[in-house]
Image (cartoon, rainbow, N blue to C red):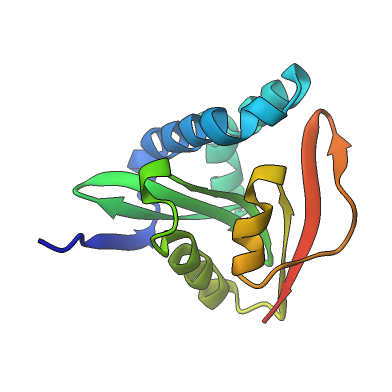
Length: 151
């Protein structure tokens, strides 16, 4: 049977599940390249209360991908800037990030989209059409490469 992925806006009742996925993927793939300060800073950013406040203020919009009722992908963005893009490791390279990216782009319809990519995700963003706009930087322990995709 073919896998059926379901894409849509986050059901706020499932925020904790979505953030658990973000946390797990971050710890597995990105945290090994971060300092303790960077890991703590990221964990503060994805605290449910903090994200819920951003959602209620319109400071972030989140979409998810599900498979068999389980959230396996998350994208969070504000206008033309991606704040979060995480896909469960077993679903990497299956087009999920691209579909989430396209949903976000269709919603906001920006001329360009920016992201501060972790070193781990740079190649994935290049595949989505992003180019580096500056050298790697570190702010509050968070390592990132500023990137942009012109639509």
